[in-house]
Length: 426
Image 1 (cartoon, rainbow, N blue to C red):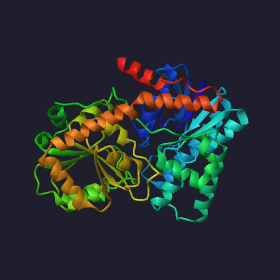
Image 2: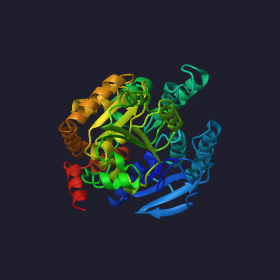
Image 3: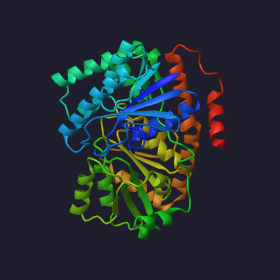
Image 4: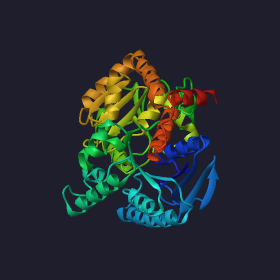
């Protein structure tokens, strides 16, 4: 089987989709799939220039030239998108023909490039929907609902989906949206495959708090109940409720909030902290990937947030990393999302609606007063992760999708269980 993964970012970039696709590509290559990753030479935050070609753990990486202004300015981002569309299209048409090309949604609607190249060169096309466009842009107010541009983008998205050989969505919420927009007759071609984490790389760690806090200059927090958010501080996140809850809890010295990362809402968070003189919120830059497990292990509870109106449109991939870490998840935002439903259904944390800062503050008071409560939730989180969201489960599901795409027989029963067992022995 020969597969090209088309995404703007790939190893060694730190973006969420880059890390997920790099892990998937490694494991597919180990299963005998010939994998090529087609990406941009630039990085997620702009700047940088990765090699045009290299090989990483059995995966051939091809990178095309594109501008790399990053996400600070709209025009720069549009330039990054357009130049990558052009470069990716040219490379897909000239590189050795693959059997399958799988396109993500970074940048938006890059699947159209994969669709056209696939049809012209006889390659099957798989659309992996990490986010739905233009739905995200409409929900965030970037483009008007019902406007000419929006309608044109919606039409292009429907064309892409209806011509895809297989479609992968990240949960039942997204499945409902896709079938409502593009047609229920697409259901037989859609596979629900959740994002995942690596249960060997991210695991429950005890006794690492002091070491991590000393390394980042937060040693005074060692005895506090730490609530941590790690990752992109982006527009899809809901931080107002979190900040208001922190303000309500500023008199409770035993509770502290730590944000690790950068993004479009970084400045907003800093302004809020300064305006209200909050000493219980601490901001750190991105940490090296090898330190992620320690940072998660240093926390007592982990935040996942999603802005209202984004359920089924965007799925926070950190949900699965947090489950793997064996810590309770405090979900804040759109309660219709799959992440919120997972937390509530499996009692591995709590879900709080946008604006419910008082409820969030009360939840944290209860957890800090009796730490056996969040500890039990953390154990259930890890158990759920091992049953459903560990890396080998996802890899086996992708292999099944690709087999169906090529009209091959289904993977034999029990393969997922054997892959999980084999990888845990490594």
